[in-house]
Structures are given as C-alpha cells and as structure tokens.
Image 1 (cartoon, rainbow, N blue to C red):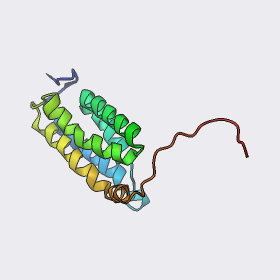
Image 2: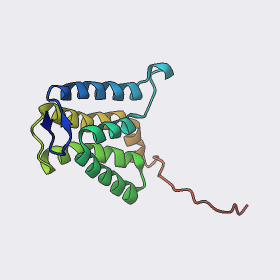
Image 3: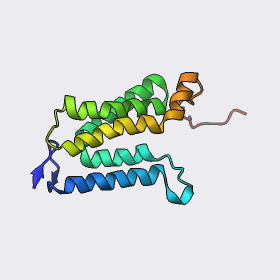
Image 4: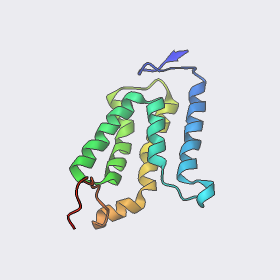
Length: 142
C-alpha cells in the first residue's frame, strides 16, 4: 500500500478506479437520468469526493468558500472561487505531485465547476444573483 501525503492508505492501482467512480458520481448528480438530465448537486458530490481523496486540500478549499461567502454573500461565487483554488492548493501550496491522475482530477474540477455555473456567472455580472441570507428565528411581528 502507498500512503498519500495526507495519511490515507490506498492501493496504487486503485486511485484510477477512485477517480473513475468519482467522475461517474459527479456526472450522475449533475445530469441525473431520472429527472431529465437536470440536477445541480455537483458541488456537494465534489465535496464528498474531495474529503475522500484530498482531505487537507478540501479543508483549505472549504475555508476559501466560507471566506468568499462571508465577504460577498454569494454561494455560487464561493463555489466557483473555491473550485478554482482547489488545484492551486493541492499542487502548489501542498506540493502534491506523486499521483498525476489526482492532479488531472483537481484541474478538471477547476475547469468543470465554472462551466456548470455559467448561468450563475451571468447573473453575478448582471447583479441578478441571489445572496445567501440567514433566516432569524423569532416572533412574527405581523
């Protein structure tokens, strides 16, 4: 068995299988067969994949998402910027070069997420994107 930089144990040949299954899971959530190929749960699926394959990089990327969300109020902007920061974190900040297939997957995330968020990007540019709001519990004053 090999040890990833983050301590996860795996068999060397299994990493490609992990990536193939990860790809299938994302495609299945973004383009589900049973609802007319209209999904939208790709980010949540990528989060699970990231936690399994890239725990430290994913944690850092979650921090990027939270910071962008808190500063901007836009979930979509946080998702897009976090996804683009993901391979930068994995490759350049953490210096992971041992598994080229994981590098390819990390870069694919940075390319795939903005493509699937094209409508959100247009709404952001036009100032039409909805901001994240926390609902306060309390008495109804009406």
